[in-house]
Amino acid sequence: MKKPIVNLLMTLLIFAGMLSCGGSQSKIDEIKAKTQSAPADPMAEWESNKGIGPVTSLVLPSEMDPELIANGQQIFESMCSACHKIDKKFIGPSPKDILTRRTPEWTMNMILNPDEMVQKDPIAKQLLIEANGSPMANQNLSEEDARAVLEYFRSL
Image (cartoon, rainbow, N blue to C red; front, top):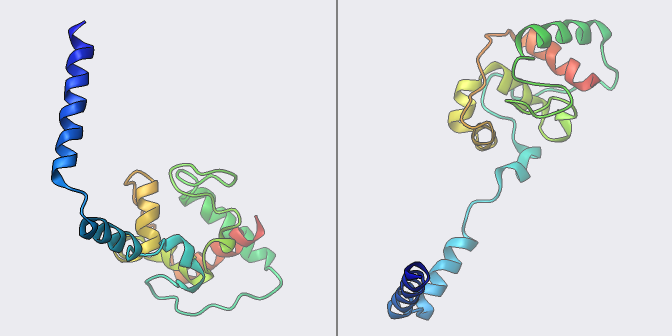
């Protein structure tokens, strides 16, 4: 019987404290200003983000290269599939349809330069949070290997 009374009293005390702090218009305006000036969602600006790394520009041909796809699949299966699953998010995100969510340059830079990307790139930082702080391992792939993996991703 004492618990409900104690809970009621605590609620009333908290409410009274909130009222005594005042809800002045300046406080409300300050909160609104902070909310309105908050940085935009980094995931929403992916189309202009090329990431941080050696790949600054990449034009993908309209036709995919079967040899490059096979090489990329082999690399992915041996070095990436422990954390990435094709059809679902696992430890890391699914690579399926990656180019509808990231630029080719960003994708290759994430493969080639994951350490710096998670420190400086806003999207990579957000993905690190979503992966519960599990950073992507640097597999020390060459640009050619990363390009092959990207071609494999295109084929999914």
